[in-house]
Image (tube, rainbow, N blue to C red; front, side):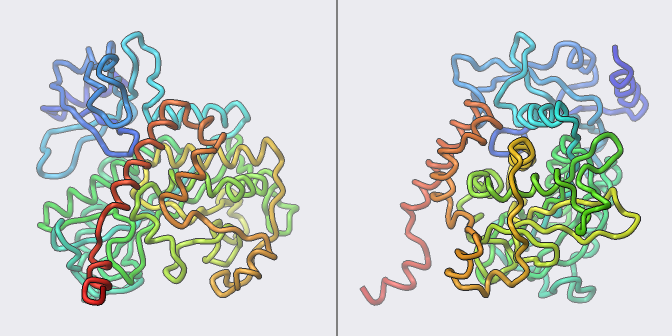
Length: 440
């Protein structure tokens, strides 16, 4: 048995762990779990635990349903919330009964794209900034406060909830950099310290559950819905990313006036060129596109800048002595995406730019929202998809997505999103009733 597995077995015994939850995600990014007893743990490491994959979104059909979950000992932690005393968790890799990787496992999709980067000599690091809302309950959007950006008490009533969430995350080995009240009422942000992409995808899944668990313990509800309140800012997941060669940041170039290497410039160019087709993954819900509208700080137009926060891609300004912090920030993703698939397509787009030598377009220094359509067209600035339907149509023809995901995930995601759009467009909304019922 490997040392990391032996360590987990010892921790289970020493900490008197009663149950171990095995975690994985479906294609849509929902966390799945089942529990085993300590007596089954050694077998789980050796052979995995079987389950019915036909009941998991995007996995398999009923006639080929047998799946095996193999726990990753590096992800072992105790769960800190009171409802799970003496309970631990591990993320799993999903395999077929013959031991081969299951291609629809989102964790495997990310691993496959990270392997491509590794073969080119790179390791991907990411640092996401997830925003969310606290509401009184799960059936409405009654806010807890009327605070704004960086507000402190008494306007920011949720400070204790954020603090408790941070303690929970840190107890599970997840390092937090910042936390604060966001722009909208009852909106908050907790930023995670950058890490390698696979660890961070695991951390994002843990983060989202931790936020919800702590909120539930206090009798409130936390949501990562991208745009729950009309007329207020939505919730984003601005994602900082960089590529390293060993301990060296491949995005940094001392000789460049912007301190950006040609690798970084090609990576940004790849993100920009493929932004429309990967939007379906970064913004996968009908509601996601209610956030991506002008006037609410969310990016709409495809361009990059160093200072301009209306740009899709922002390059944080270089600080002397901070070469390792050179990075790019993609501002369009929302926190309701599947982080494994989201990081995979960001990386795939960036690597495409590097492999094909894409040229970086000129920097956008103006407020893009104030430019006319003609001015944006003249500057070569395109737009992100306006709704889920447009995103589906663009993604449908994407060779990049098909390559990054494989046929199974690619076809399933498109089918699922088309069904979501068909269900949505048939709805009669409160807006329509309020606007038309009395006049038509």
